[in-house]
Image (cartoon, rainbow, N blue to C red; front, side, top):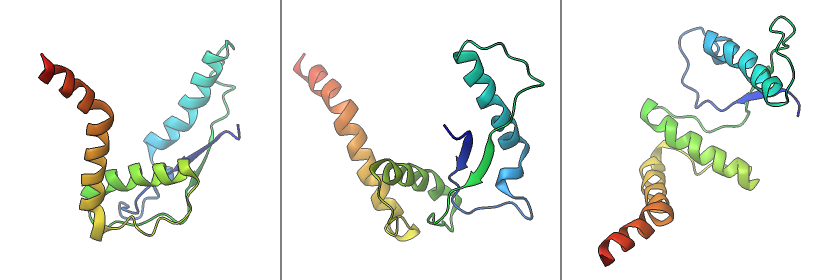
Length: 121
């Protein structure tokens, strides 16, 4: 484990503020090592905790609309987990298609079985 937090951010920034410098991200960089120490059974000496390094993922698709950020993140993580590097198809023009496909996947995986069992009764 390289003790690094990688931020997957869609490119919407507040004026003049880098996302990795926000107080919430800085707190997360300390919280994660503290949780790690706790899980490993080590005594938490909060003064000795070394915060994780924070880096931004490179080459991510950008969105012009804040409401597309969630689907972008889900699809980027899916690509990353599958080892895919080309994320060119994650864009504002097909965001609604990505949402529709994800809804169908979720229904097929989780809801369809429950729905079929209820309809049999």
